[in-house]
Image (tube, rainbow, N blue to C red; front, side, top):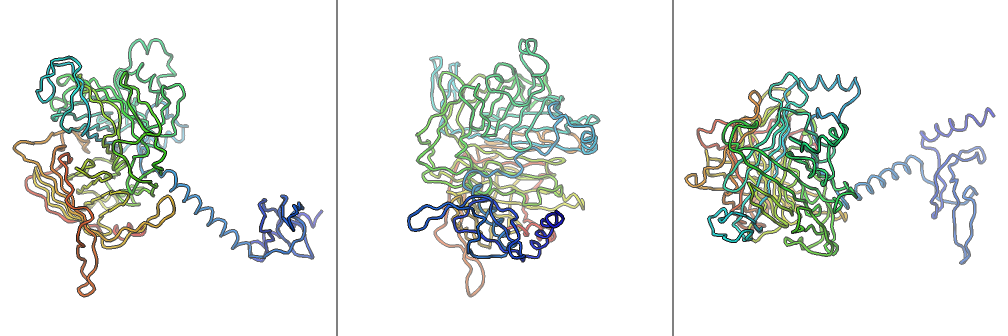
Length: 616
């Protein structure tokens, strides 16, 4: 009895010393347990049964029998098993779906559904004493759509004398800008849950509430929502417990919500009670707001306006930041369609998209836009592109005019921190002429390094093209810009090293050194842009930036090769992308002052550059 009690201890000591040998058959599939003492030596044996074949006869025997087998050190065996398991996990992740970093919320909601135990609530109160905002930006570009307007004239003044006449219009964009400020900070006068929307011809609507407890958000996915107002009859006919829920079944949401929004960016959400079952990320909203260019953001401060949107994103079309987020075989495509008789979003199979991905795609590991240090409170603010490119299907009703669309370009990003930069520029386009699977996002500004309080100027350019990712960032190359006070954005970036990634099939993908130039232009005399609001550190949501969706965009990208004689990098002709153009470029300036043109070059602090380069 005493000797048996020491067996596990002796086995553990020998295991740590690496002196144990593992006996295993080539056909062994069982679990490993501590075995018996054989001739004074401890061995590891299997408690399962092992099947071997000898001379075409099937023989079953207990695997604890002594069988001559190869012997390897146990520690090395454990290390190999862990390495194989880790590789299999990474391979499975790459082959199916890869989440985008920071897609979930960073603030702690004051919504009653997130109530925590007493000690955690006390800790959250300490954290909530400091100013904090989080914002989500979504852009929908319509190049091929239909309009249904009951008025006699459409937005361009064309005569539609028949009610319900359907016609096609030039390209236009919608933007949905959501923000939450100082959630749960009772002492703050800047608490606000807000939705701003930009529509055709620079129309601008806003609706907001001081009740930040109405805002909810997921910590894992880009799912969020807020109910500004419920229908009176729904409130009176339902008990109080239903008013503290977060996301709702889409049909219940339509019945109960007079104004608000709900974004479900979780493709695993499958509610059988909905018709049809919801398996795609879905954007829903109703806004009874007012003209945001006049007055403030709260109700009753401008001309009334309405907005309703309901559209879904094809999950197989989503290109996050670094590549596609989901693998797909083009022979089996799930297609999102619109039921013309309702606002419901339906699905059908074995159909191809109007913007067809012409080949198989594999999910790639997603990246942080600001590098791995974005996971820590070092910079102010933080920025993450969550959808560089995607395809949206559904409808938007703006002040009574319904726009119906299918497989149109969609873009998403977010910010979080104390406030936006003191000065910045931003450009974006994912609807190029004669180019599918091409998107570019670029931005730069003056950000603060929180531990020191110092500021630094930096910029970036990110291009996704046919499954390849070209990222020009200041810790890997050079980024320069020349931005006018309004009307011109000239950007340059390069990366002077080869980049290696792996796709979902395990194949090695190499991106060569490259240089990229992007230019956006608009005529200040005919396109003055739209001034809209952004969170500021001391005054909250105030007019702070200017935007346009009608800038002419031109993009060129070259491969670079090093000259063996001069050691300088030179552009290889022809370019990988040769002057791709679009008239739907999004361009913005913000903060200030903007008294003169801004010519700058990324100046990253050496310690920050060194830290960011620790992760390739």
